[in-house]
Amino acid sequence: MDMTTQNFANLFLQLGLENDDAAIETFIKDHHLPDAMQLYEAPFWNEAQKHFLAESLAQDAQWSEVIDHLDTLLRK
Image (cartoon, rainbow, N blue to C red; front, side, top):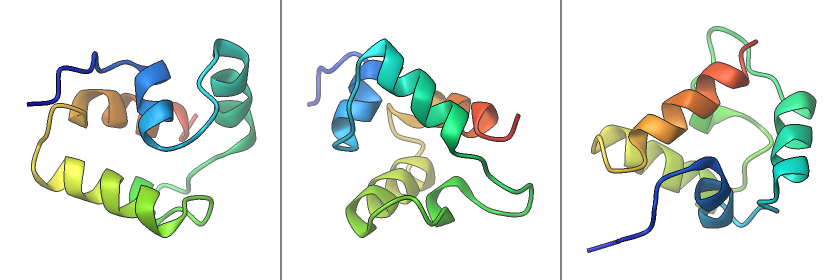
C-alpha cells in the first residue's frame, strides 16, 4: 500500500517533475488545457505520465483528488 501523502509536491514527484513550490507554480503558469481535452491527453506529458494520470483517474485512485485539482488549475 502506498503511504505517500497526496499533495502537489508528491504528485509532481510521482510524475518525475521538479516539485518545489516555484517549479509547480511555473508549470501551472506555463501549461494550459483546452476545455475539450482530458488532462492525460495533453501534449506536455510523456507516455509514462499519461499512463499514470489516466490510470489513477480511471481507478479513482488515491491521487484522483490532487489530479483533479491540477486539472482545474490548468484550465484557468
